[in-house]
Image (cartoon, rainbow, N blue to C red; front, side, top):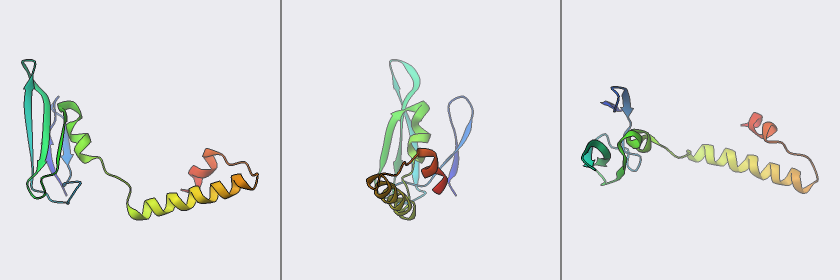
Length: 102
């Protein structure tokens, strides 16, 4: 489980482990731009050196963003492959039908 950090506006958000190596040894930092406090920030992993640097109001969500797991990627690949076969066979494929199969 990640650590909780204070986000701008006083909201508490969970800071997940490093998206690159999974380490919890991460640091959050802010930089002032244009004379205003907390305009940009970074989260850096002390284990692998991975880093996210962006506007401070997007920082935690950018760090916490994850990609699909291998299993999810395989499921999506199968679903898309089946849809392409259906389309080649002249069948109608709707987005709603595909989403129901997920």
